[in-house]
Length: 397
Image (cartoon, rainbow, N blue to C red; front, top):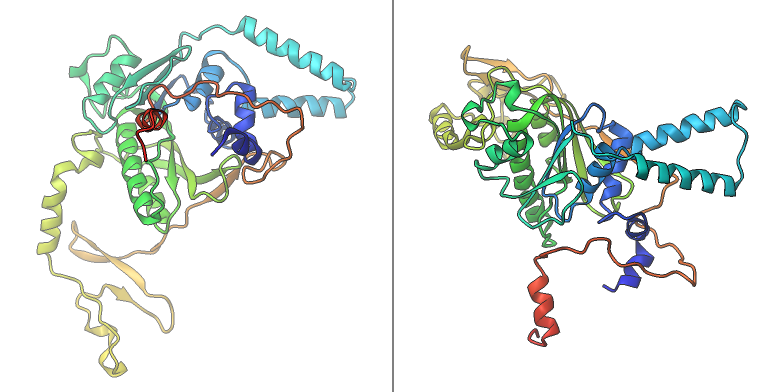
C-alpha cells in the first residue's frame, strides 16, 4: 500500500511522523497512561518486543527528558482551563498561545537532562536504533538466560548467584510493557493462540522482575477466552482491566491488558525454567489428575426420563429448578467438594483516549499543499527486507 493512501486513511500515522514518533503505536501507550497513570512513581521499566522502539521512545521522552504527554499534559491543560474560567489568567489569542507553546517546548529542550535514577531496558530479537538513555538488548524473552542479562543491564553490580524470586532486591522493575504481536495470518483462532503464547512469555518474564506493587501492560487479541485470561491474571495483580485506546483501530481485535499492583501469592517463586511455578511438572500433574476418579456429567438423551442429575457421584453440578447449574470444585486438601460461587469472571473493558481525538478508522481530507513525510526511523533489519531486495533485483515473481 502506498504512502499517500496510508496517509489519507490513518490520521495517527501522519501525526506520528509530524510529532517525531517512530510509529503510531506511541499514541496507544500515551492514551493508556491518560487512563491508568502508568508512569506515576516509576523509575525502572522493561519494554519487551520493543522494535522499532516507539514505546521506548515514549519512556525516554517522559521519564528521562521530563516531557509532558498523556495524563500529565491533560492535567496541565485542565489546570490552565480552570484558571482562565476563574479569571486568574487572561484569555490568550491564537498567536499568543502558539508563542507560549514554542517557548515551553524550547525550555523543555534546554532543561531536559537525563535522570540518573531512571533505568529503561528494551528487549527484542530484532535490532533497535539507539535512543537517549535506553539500554537495548537483543535477546529472547522465553530463554532463562534473559532474566540475569536484564537484571545486569538494570544494575551493573548485580550478582546472578543472589537471584531469588522472593527477594525484593532482585525484583527491581516498576513497570513491564509489551507491544509484541505475531505476523497475523488472517486465521483468527490461530492468531489468538500465537498471541497468547507471546503474552505467556512476557508475563513469565514480568513475574521474575516485577517488584510488589508493580504494573504490567501487554497487547492481547480479544477472543472468547478473555474472561479466562482475566481470572488468571487476577491471581497475581489486584486490578486487571482490558483497555482499548482510541488510536487502536476499532476494526482490529487488538486490545491491551493492564495489570496494576502486583501481589504474588504466598510462597510463589517465579522462574523462566518453571513458568508460572509449574514448568516441566505440568505433564506429571496432568497424569496425576487423570488417575483420579473421572467426573462425567449425565447427558440428556432422547428419553428425558433417563437423564437425572442425581446419577452424578460425586455431584459436579447442582441445580435448583430452572436456575443455571452451579459448578462445584474438588478440594484436594480436604477431600471434599466445594461450591464455586463465581463460575465466570467478566473482564472490565475500558476505552482510553479523548473522545474528541482523531478516529483511527476514519479517512480525513488532506489539504492540497500537504507534503507526505518520511518515517522518523525506518526499521533496521525488518523481516521483509530480503523480499524487498529480491523484488528490486527482479527475482521475485
